Image: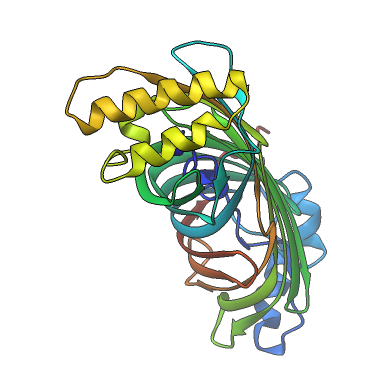
Length: 341
C-alpha cells in the first residue's frame, strides 16, 4: 500500500513549461536598426504560421523548433482520504475509518527531455519524456504508530501547450500540460494536470538585440488523479513492522473491527507475524486509495538568460503553500524547415 503513496505525486514535474521565448515587440532606441531589418525580412520558414506577418509588424519571433534538457525537484504534501484493502485477490473492504495517516510527504527528482514547436507566434506545443526517482515519507498513526520511507524509479510522458506574448519588455505566459507517470506498483499510469501563469519583464542587452535577461513571478496549480489502485507484497509495505509489541497491538485493534474488515486485517497481521519470524510469506495486499494534493496552489519565481536566439538557460523556484519546487532548464532552438516556393 505505502508503495503508491510516493508515486501519485511524481509528475508534476517533468512536464512543466517555463517562460520560453515569445513574440516580442520591443521599443528600444539601441536596436532600431535590428528591428527595422526584421520588418523588411522575407520570412522563409514554415513555422510559426503567421510568422512573416509578425515580423512585418516589428515582433521578434523565437526560432520555432526547440529541445530542452530539464532537471526538476519537488517536495509536496499528500492527503490519503480513503483506503480500501484486499488480500491475494479477495474483495476489498473499506478501512478508511480504522486506518489513519499523518502527513504524507512526497519528494521527486526528475530528468526530462522536452521537444517543442511554436505553431503560431503566440502558441507553443510540446511533449515531455523522461524519468527519475521519487521518495515518500509515510506516517501511520492508527492502528499503530509507524513511519517508513519508500523510494522508486518512475517513467513519464506528457503533452502541453503554452500561450505567450509580450509588449515593451513585459510578458505573460499561460501554460497547461498533462503528464502520465508509469510506476511498476500501479495498475495503470497516474495522470497529473498542471497549470501556471507567469508575468514578468524582459531586460534587453543594449549591445546585443538578441541577448536578454527575463525575470517573472506567477502561480502554479496541480491536480492529480484521485484514485490509485495496485498490488504489493506485505514485506514491501511494512518492512520491520513486526518488531516489539506491534503484532499484539494489531491483534487487539483487529478484534474491534466489523467482521469483513476483521478478516482482511487478520490475514495481513498473520503475514506480518510470519515476516517478523523470518518465515517466507508471499501475501499480496491489493489496494484502492483516494488521495489529494493538500495545497494545489503555490507561488513561483524564475529567471531566464538568453545568450542568443539559439540558447536560453532558465531556473525557477516554487515556494509557499504545501509544495516547494526547483527547476533548471537548458533550451536550444533552431529555425527548421523552409517553405516550399
